[in-house]
Image (cartoon, rainbow, N blue to C red; front, side, top):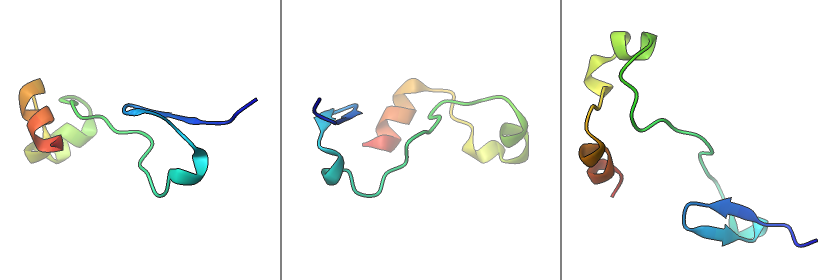
Length: 53
């Protein structure tokens, strides 16, 4: 069985992965983080996409 890593851009060989962040919430407007750091709250999907590009 061939091993691979599934990414949002397609499957890649594990040796090509390099350093990565395996989990992020782009839209989160609740919880203690939102109360402690309101400047990081993003309510717009379009704004989140723009920030990622």
